[in-house]
Image (tube, rainbow, N blue to C red; front, side, top):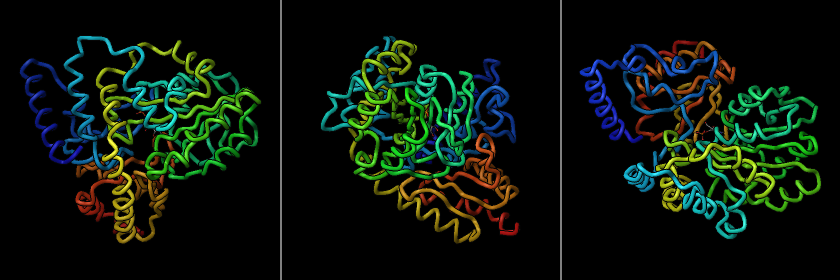
Length: 402
Ligand SMILES: Cc1ncc(COP(=O)(O)O)c(C=O)c1O
């Protein structure tokens, strides 16, 4: 959200709060002082994710805790989503069109008609991760080779009673999951490394989930470096070994629309996979606004050109400023990614950095909940104009031994 929009949003929220109060309705969490997003989750039951602080902090300026696009939501797509609300007295189209075909054209500009049947949209990638894990052959589950990764894959695997293997286990598994580039570590494998990883880690007949949500940031040539360009490899692998490779995208990051919920999966085949997933998917899980949003965003090349130009510049600026202030902190991740995985080298410093960021309404993500990387924080790439406020809030950290 741009700062001016945040202000308008908070004013609107205050207005809604006062209407609620007049009607005797209380807003239990947001009104409570000193609470953080961590407390919004029922962490005994739910998997913790970032991006909740904004709902509870008394002061909120910008969300540095999520990996959404620093440019904010594409305005044309947002307008399309708003217009779609006018038709909310109707059901969304069950075939997910025209959003689905627009996304297919975006993914395969030259061959979308050939592959649109392999594509399924979901209520965020999270819905699809769960559906595919449900469909996969039961047995063992293994994450990608990096020390930690996005946790929804593991949550689903636990729910469906897979035996969890460590990322470095030499054992091949029935279902393997790779987040590439890896959120949060920022590690990235090339296509040939991904293929090597697949072939060394999955059992014949197994499922492979490759999450490329952050890969389109790569460059205007992102398709060439992605599994979306590897249709023949994926089809041959299925024919010869029964191994099913699914390519997953959360579009809530690239197009900064987490609140709308939008994800997709490219299945290895239309008949054996996409149709099966469709048969177990709850109907209308992608609502009208999200479909209209997608139809517009997938055609907005201007926004993407700007994303490819601006993100690495703003990212480098953020890294430089952090290093200038805290020379011992280590900044990880590829230069095109929309976040920085920062090792402060001290659990105490990391904890305090999180607290201080919340105190100025600019929450960063702690590396502790879920990831268990206690000395790390994840910092989103954001407009450099906002950075001095965050760095200023971190000044007390200079008193620690950095
Ligand atoms: C790598 C990755 N995949 C998938 C998701 C799921 O996102 P959503 O359900 O919002 O599409 C996320 C969210 O943080 C993510 O980081």
